[in-house]
Length: 87
Image (cartoon, rainbow, N blue to C red):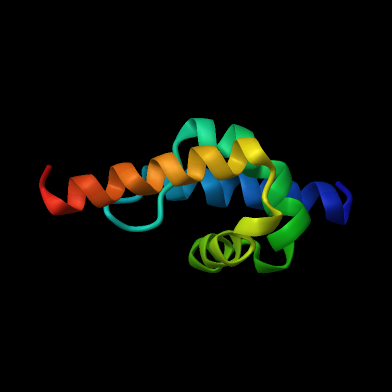
């Protein structure tokens, strides 16, 4: 397995682990995983496999995210905020 493929597998595993993590921590929906994996590899691959660092990097890189990734992350973030507020 090449280094790039190993990194991609590690990132996918990290995103899957985040999706299964307890709320309200950093978690990604399956749609976010699908829409954002390319952006995560491109912009934040250096943070693999640290899920918290990947998440922070993606937030920091928001302006550089693809439109689809940005939209789904914004939607997921708003849903987590509403859930944390008890709505």
